[in-house]
Length: 95
Image (cartoon, rainbow, N blue to C red):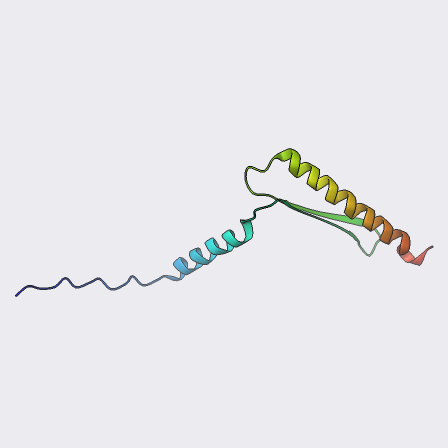
């Protein structure tokens, strides 16, 4: 009579294993892009001061000149749109 090998029970996941796995998935979801992405936001705070937020994201190997041209184009469009909005709605309601 031969004894069959008893399979080892599956290893129990620790909380840290789950956290590490979720962090890895989040990183993949938030960094995987096939095209460069540029976001520019102009806002006016309560004092009337313009605040600018810029975000540039691109996959590795993106040509820096292409990325720079894209960023400049997006920035200029956002700036022009913001200027039009300021002209239409001056700070403090002044015309």
